[in-house]
Image (cartoon, rainbow, N blue to C red; front, side):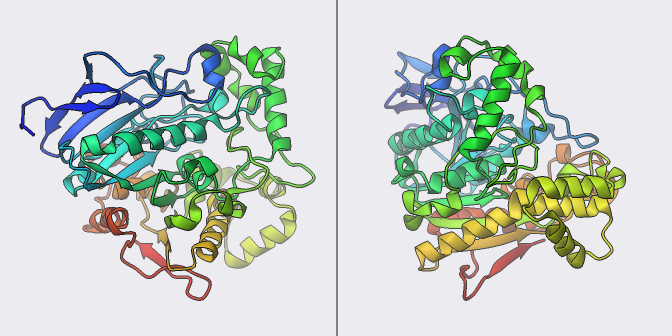
Length: 480
């Protein structure tokens, strides 16, 4: 292929023009599905019809409709990106490749962003693919439907439309990766937070069979799906706030701005039922909606044929209490209320946390309860279930323990702190300062190379560099 100044690639949907820089080639805003407009916001994704001529792949696409997010004293803009950038065609991917030479030989990594199922996009600064391209990996980052269009359970609409978007993106990658130098038979899908929970959902999704070879679940929840009964409560509240029937037809007539305006009315819903606690502790009214949790339904999807790398950070809950000042303000009553929301036997759960942290304040114990509920318990269930199913050393587990020095050194190894190390951007100045994710101190020498290197090695070979995890040998590799 000629090394023209402006790279041009032919794909099944049409030709696309990108940008070349020192790290490789970038192609942005490529649609993997038709624009979800009108009633289409509540339908299955359908293939994009393609385009005539040459598409401009030098600029990012619009983003899914989403509200602004505020994390108190902590600047989380590198994580959330620009927020809602209006435009119809936002079911898109960005690609960063060493070279779009059509070789079809390089490992492909497909990243699914987090944001509580309501926010985020592939435009976030944290998801820069330069280091992956530098190391011979084709990185694909995905946008998907969020909030009400993505996850509200509605009569007349398929469930889990945001998850179906990710399935459609993976099908697009299968059909298109070789055009950008990627091997469609060596695809690793990875995600963080809500994105990790979606990746866990893929492992139990029949439609995802054959679309990826490996999966990485970073701070997700293999038991974080809502039951249909819980989902009906959210749907009823949304319909009441809008004054419409709880059907796809009724919601299709509502503009995106109005759907966003009612989200505060859905905050804090009591989702406890006779059979289930709230797996998201009231932090989001949206999740996957499934009759069986993904960790218990792996036999339904591709999990048995997929290598899995899965883990959490050691102080996940700090993100939800430190920036907001809740470490200091949480009372015993607050702590008990949280435990009652998230545990069938709250007193016993708190007793276990107190035994593990005998000097813990109510705020510190609140962080621990959130960490266990949102991430740790579901991660353990998923790791154990996959190890039993795969049975041949295909499960790997990690813990990320580097403590950010943000907010006076109190943020610690909180949720999201591993991301700068995974993407090898931990030295970027926009991550450093007391109110920024990594704090004022420089990142430890070599830690980003270690973490990023493990992720890239896993994508290449299925081996991140340590022993597998199983019931007989529950190995957990600790970073930082």
